[in-house]
Length: 228
Image (cartoon, rainbow, N blue to C red; front, side, top):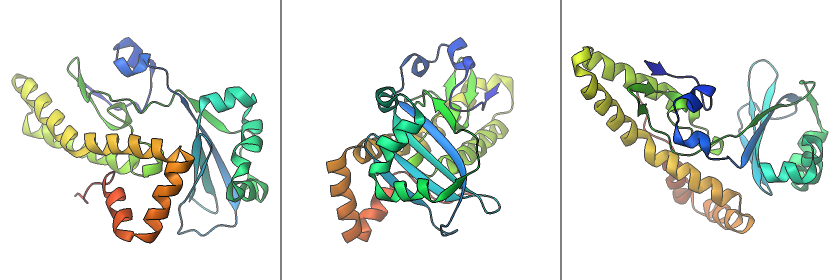
């Protein structure tokens, strides 16, 4: 059995996966918008307790998503108030919200977004994609990781197709997955925490602007090598 059902499901509770019982401090909010923005640019803006990304998608639409600490939503009481009181303190985000056409009647909101460690193999089930582990969105590498995980899982099954090789299959897949992804997930968690601290993020971004080699190194912590 292969489990590729995404970041969080009632199945996780049924399987008693440990991360499911740890409350997540994050919510995710997504809009599709029309706005004046370069099609070949991805922009990240941070704010107190979170960060927001903007990227071109199909047609003339853009995807605007942000991750915020749940406590900020509780403090201000609504998504609209959160955006007005917190996100709008960043002038780039204030401009974007005031000068865009929002295509959803209301935003898509996801609660309990967890970046806790998960096991890619449990109860003889092989987990893949976000069900096996989710990298923080700011790294921009989740889709590539999911595709790569599917590739190594398929290769592992082809190498050990017989039921008698089941234990070997699980060991091979687990080792490959951890070699490729575990450090990248951990690095993503640390980088996200740093970005949520105003003083640390300002210091890190200042260093990255002055030193391209530092920027490349930080990016390399969360991105693997090209694969076929």
